[in-house]
Image 1 (cartoon, helix red, strand yellow):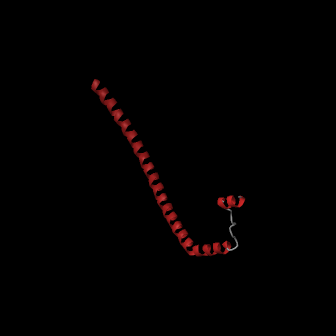
Image 2 (cartoon, helix red, strand yellow):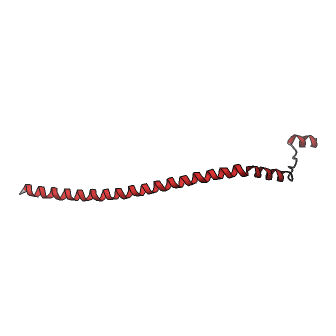
Image 3 (tube, helix red, strand yellow):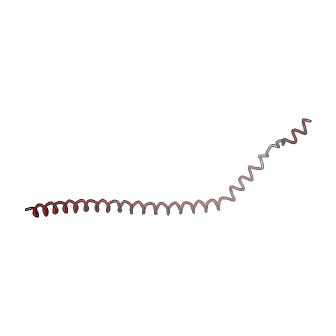
Length: 94
């Protein structure tokens, strides 16, 4: 009689543990699928960023001379003011 109770309790415990492990495995599979999706998405976006940066570099190289010429054009109209240095102002006041 005591052995029947022991085997019954043991069987119920094994079934409960098996159900819990099955649920745990199902959740782990779902999480691993999400992680795979996120990592693939990150890889795709990283590739897109690399492409964008390379296009930006090409545009800068192509239009860099234009910007330099434009800056040179405007710098002709702007002449920095001469500021008196400290020594010049001290000598001028004496």
